[in-house]
Length: 214
Image (cartoon, rainbow, N blue to C red; front, side, top):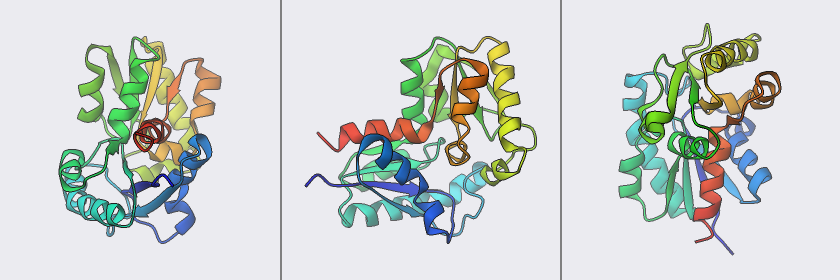
């Protein structure tokens, strides 16, 4: 039997269904079994340099645990790709970062890629892959952390920010926060704005499904 995909969530939660959500999306889309686990002590996930710094050793530790428990491929479910290089050095299985995976998929879909995230700047992991095709970044109003996306007006704020990027010339949108998968906003953006929208969880799952079949 082919080994499962281990999904590392950087948002701490006691809600097992919420923790399993990204792995469930990968299973449903690609038919690849997934086991999800979250790092401890980060109830608002990764939203700035300091929270990313605190998360990195926890990600490496959890990656080792998942690999030891039989995961044949790992996904770091965060568009900043925190601790990606360190994690790849620490385990003997392929490790996929959601941000760089989304950027790679976006390159196959468009020429000018607009990036929607929870920071004012696009994650370096994303812009490094996009290169000259990076068309700009936007943060939805009122959103500073991934948990802010759960507010009732979260989807409309994301739509507003995405519309600004498209009006400025973006022909593809990249969701640079995996929390945007959690609120299911991709179909709304594609329907209203008429451009392809790359979901980082689906992009990471796509690459992980290839890696686990090597």
